[in-house]
Length: 120
Image (tube, rainbow, N blue to C red):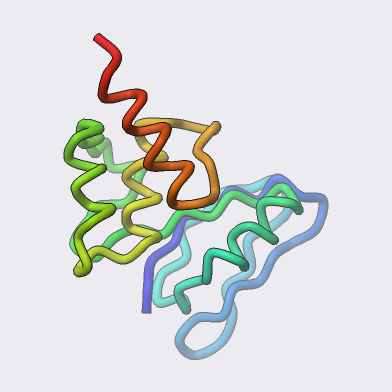
């Protein structure tokens, strides 16, 4: 089970399957969904097309609103090649550096991080 941060920018409520039932994030609201089934990249992309931003919180990582300091681009790039790091954990760390313009595909994220790493 995973912890995910959801910012529902759509006009309808969104339900996420959690242990023991569902967790509904109302339209226009943001919430942390705990004990959720980890969404696939395709599900996250589909939700993004509906205006819903989903970020998976890595195991042992604090929620985004807890004031975590983002890693630097080199550290996040190292996560991309580590087989022990799940894609969504890597994408979440990259999103902290790249912001709202974070690409959805791994190779595009890597290219954006490499560009960021070379900037002074």
